Length: 487
View (cartoon, rainbow, N blue to C red):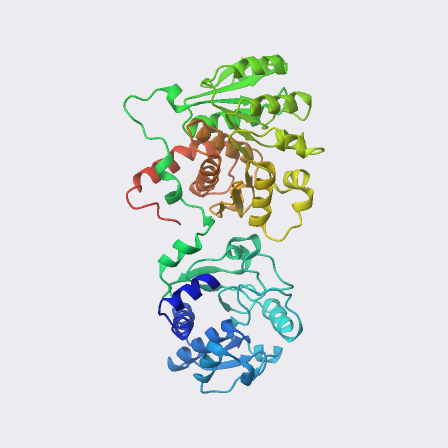
């Protein structure tokens, strides 16, 4: 954003023009959401506070009873913030908790997205009271105390009903804390030309169909099942439902064939289940290697119900040795928890790792406390040589080259047994069709969440997700001409 601001200003847009547009957008958000009522605009000592002064001026002109409070001294303001403060004809009171008596509406313009130190002192006391009394808050750029890059809370931050940010959303808006504290997010145009991104070259995106819908398989007249890929799923003797969920999800995602590689003892279980799944009898790793000798088996999934033992570890080694598309989930990650470097040394071809936070801690113990989920996933991808899909409400899909995608298109109902197996199966099915690990991970995460949204009632279980994959895919295809409209 600093580069974007500087580029806009060098192109002829003044800093005061940007601040005026930002403050006006904040005022418009207030006017759209509330009827006139007593309110307090809390201004910090930087440009975020300048936006607050502009918003206060517009709200006062609209007839609102506005009080402005400044953290610091008015004479100490510099640059555009000083210009904005001069435009406010009223007083600027000191920031104290007493401002919040009688439950006013609060515009939080204390600190912006670049805050680098914990919020404490009087500002901290005011924020604590805002939260304790659940006051209505409109945040400027970010709720004060939320780091715009990492999404971490720097000591404390208010819970806002609405956050108004400028030009583009920030990574912190889509962190778990950001999702909790930002409320309704409004990204507004303040006059920064979109062309400035050509020089900035951003490497982080919010997930959505416009990113990958063109890569989804279309049903050409001359296609056949092998052209749509063959996914092989290594199954175990217990937890047989996991491999079955993954296999059917892979087929629903478009793979032409899916084989479950089962221990002989469990073959009857898999054969008596879904008739469209192919079953191969695999006990030893040598048999798995022979199965993979068929190069038409162009994608391999190891992990869901595979078991934590030498069979899974050696099968991962065999899968990665092919150089073909590989998805590693669950047991395939856990089995390398005591020596993750051994796994990373095996990775040669297109590989997707799909850990949840616990599995991530085992594979990357030194990164588990690193601030910012996006940066943690990026560092893990760079170290491992694989694309990493780090699951959660704010799923991050990061490639070894630094590109990363954040997916927040996911309801809390996905927290159910087997949900991760479905996600891994969808990703495997997409990689069988030729999608890169980054594209497959992003597509799978979005479809997974969309299926859960489509269920539209309580009681979602993993089996329900699979049946809704065709509806999610059909909706994307129908909206292909304009790009899918996000909920």
